[in-house]
Image (cartoon, rainbow, N blue to C red; front, side):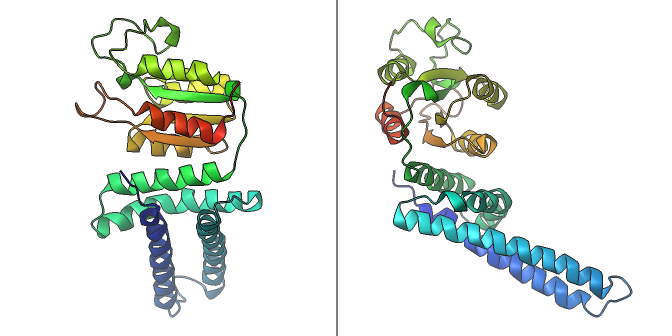
Length: 250
């Protein structure tokens, strides 16, 4: 499925315009209410908002430039991070108003994130990369617990976990299976990878990308033929492609 990056970018820009319009409206409404809000205080507040708006605007512009040029600019990464952190909720809200499903917005957000990470042209050794998998990839009837140790997998190939473990071995990457965000964060804190290839649904991937902050994360969406959180799967070739974008082997 071709995921359109422009959906998220457009929502970021529209959200900025809406916020700018709201701030302007508040400014005009409060200008004549000196009893409630002093002009000096009002000016300071609006100046702070205007400065923040300028920084966020720089971040959105930087994202667009990086996508167009397929090249990252380290000096602008803090601005792009600020834009995503502050405008992400607004983008979701704007998308709902426009009738765009949350799932499509998150897919677009993940696609933008992946593109920006790939633009960094990272060259990491295999052990510096973590392949982070959700436990729902494992066959629900499998009696072997792999969340704490993937080596407990018997490689029966009833699910795709065995293929992903073999992929990790091929690239000498660390493979972890998490039951949720808390355990995923624990694995990252303990392993301290310099790059992560994460498999999950739209919601978990977007939250994980935001949680990681300083760590480049490439998200690969899982397949859910049986619904969410049970006997899911993933295209192994997509995971390998994500690995190749940041990892140059052992």
